[in-house]
Length: 343
Image 1 (cartoon, rainbow, N blue to C red):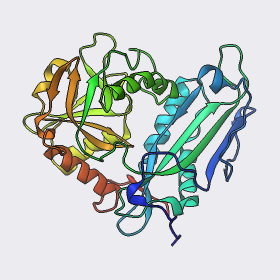
Image 2 (image 1 turned 60 degrees about the horizontal axis):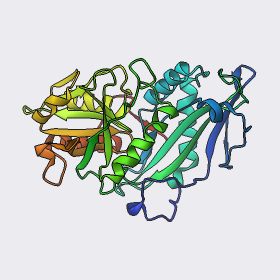
Image 3 (image 1 turned 120 degrees about the vertical axis):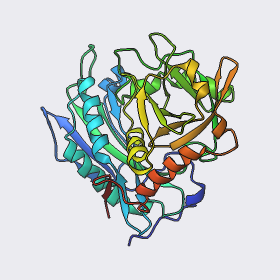
Image 4 (image 1 turned 90 degrees about the vertical axis):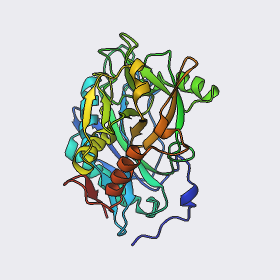
């Protein structure tokens, strides 16, 4: 067994820490090269690189965990591979082959095994695959050459305080256009949310909730996570929209709810004026897994989710969180193919 790094794992923040190895593959002359693990964490490119001029960049996020029996595993990397493939097509980038994506994830996690936090620490190894246009582009067109990379970093909880309920606000900005890029994981989607999140933090909120851009009456997602709701009967309700990113965590929660906990799951349009009837609301994504929402502030009007209004996550979200993380950490047997062993 590889000796772990000397790190205070229990007090890690959600921040970047340079690890030993990263994976790099280049697309030139119409093909991806064989790829390799390297030590250098710096990137050299032209000042006119496509990513710098026209934001031609897509990325993913997933995690590696140490399980209860001491093995290192990843959670559903095949879904991240598929989503990056789809994202690349939308931005006229050459998709990185899905089988090679999964293999590259395995390689880079194994190479950084010493950085995977130990079981029970509450921390994990965050894995960031990304791809960008690297050749010079001055006219508005796709780049010709691309680079695919994966780095890793050990991280603690995404929200300070872990799974404590947070307050969020209805944003006056739109997250995505109706037929835009909201359903892919492009860097440009997150750039436009930065001003809004800085404003929200200044006002004392943890995040923004975005409404549909066409009518501004329906719930979509936050700047970095999908949303889920629990109704008065304990059923799970998931907002549906063509501009919502298909979250790996949210799709996994649906299966956990239905097949492990016997919870009825409904995916439909969710209107802002109805959410006061829900008992619980959660934000879900790779970084936070599930973060409970205590209250949505709609321009001064507070919409409180009663089962999250007691200083802790509500009962249904707690069951979902415990079951999903139990699968990720090897305490509960998951569906076939969900947990991929690394070392």
